[in-house]
Length: 503
Image (cartoon, rainbow, N blue to C red):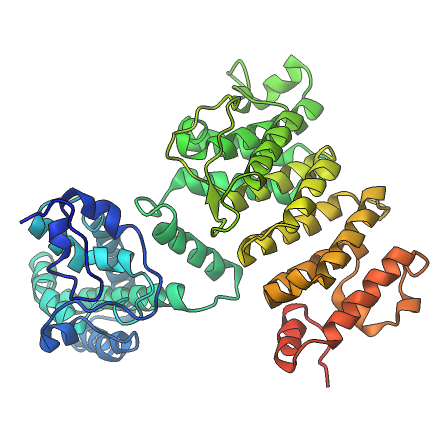
């Protein structure tokens, strides 16, 4: 029933089409279509209706069921001290079951007609249409059918009084999971924890769809970069000690992963830079690596200057490529001298490279003039909105590197300030939209070493850098930009930059 060279028609019901894709189904289903409105599954209106569920239906139906089950155990004589841990156990069991099914069943590779069809119904549809708001939570009819075997399994291993509360706890875990899942797809989190959860989950959909589960090494790698970024100005060896503990926990897999060749190379170079300053001698270095001959970060490590030069060549290669009209989220570097062999099909997210450039810049001034000049050159090209925001934001971050502990800026900051001011006023930026403009203003404020509320409250003559013509001109430009915004944009800017309320 598999058809060679079959093409799915998105305007027709999909379920009984996808099976014909055969081995091509795996690639097709992991090329997401981003739309809040999903496709039609079945020709029959009845079966189609059963696949559609609004998110609030889950708590409305199943929370009362969960509470009723828990109350059954209370009526059977279980005390509160017994009920609470059993509810927690039920939530844990549900979490374990969902994780196991998701990792080992939902992402199984299929190629037969019925295998593809079943997988698409079970989970493939969610990866093909991740933002389909009516198919993000599990349909009540399917949940009801599954409740019977799960109830009997719990009943088989527990006493009559424990069965209801344990099942109710599992049902509560399911409701929490489904509602959270919908929230991560369609809400706009404001807290750091929920922002990171959303980022991690959407990476599972749009970047690493075969991963995105509990990845110990991935967590440790991200934490390592976070520590390096936050403690770049510190002169103690405490961050280095923490990073080496992380490396010990993660094992060799952290440094040998081919999926992170570039980030690993940068991580090694940055760690070795302060380590050589703190533990320059063999005896000193041995204190950090007892029982080992050398630091695990030293294997095939390069100097910061070499890594910065390589990243700049990547960006230079990008600026000269023919992909400027595309989405600009990633590109494939052809850097021939890169000592770490990269898989041919490995795409490097360009925004990740910009982040690595910023991190290197935190540890050395070598990149400042060179990379700033290259990034400013890129701003004159037809970039996408998202990438333009990334470039402008990085320029703002790099500007803070050019300021010493006493607040004195180097000569390159004044030039950058003038370039950003010119960019804010150019016709291309105005046409690019509000996102690029506000990113430019934020970066411009970093070159002024002021927050917007200070510029907004005080007259230019009262500001600390008034004597510098370039400085005062940029400050005036920021206030002028704000005065020209629409009412809606002013409200957003006021909230985003925490300005005093504008009457």
